[in-house]
Length: 259
Image (tube, rainbow, N blue to C red; front, side, top):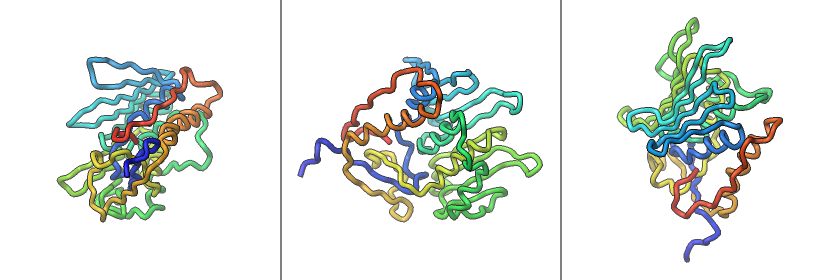
């Protein structure tokens, strides 16, 4: 039977740290349309630059086969030195978005996690061999903080299938606000599967002992609506409307890469 033209085949992947990167627009579109970040694109360079309205934060997305694809940098403030966070190409966009959503929230919700270890410990992560480290139950993801209690350093989240097969790494500088790191680890610990379209090309592994993939046909209008709802939700946090019109996304083609 031919596929229903009004549906899109979506894979729901768990655990999310092995789901592949997803659609970068899940991060960049809301920053621009809901949070007022300005963008500058060089048509001769495969990169995207987004600057916060106060010009203190810069998000760079630049394909780099030998390094991190995403870099979020923030200028120094009176109470905090400059800081950065960076993410590998296969870092799920839902995890990066958790950090950028927290950064752009004008009124962080009461009770939001501020200890990066807490969400992982509550999800069954266990102490790792490395100092100040935790490991996921499946052994493929690790959190580590360098330094000491007196002089804490940078945070690292590393996902690897084995010592020779790294999947992605997230790095947070020593001065990155703890609430951003905690938002990232909370999203990392979330057991809810994440949606991907045509995940066969993006999954780092199909080992059924590590990854669960549930495929279902989803109405195309629902897939297209997800971005618009996300933009509206983030824009509603601000007292002033977004500076640019909210786009009406088109349903993705059957085999195009998306979230």
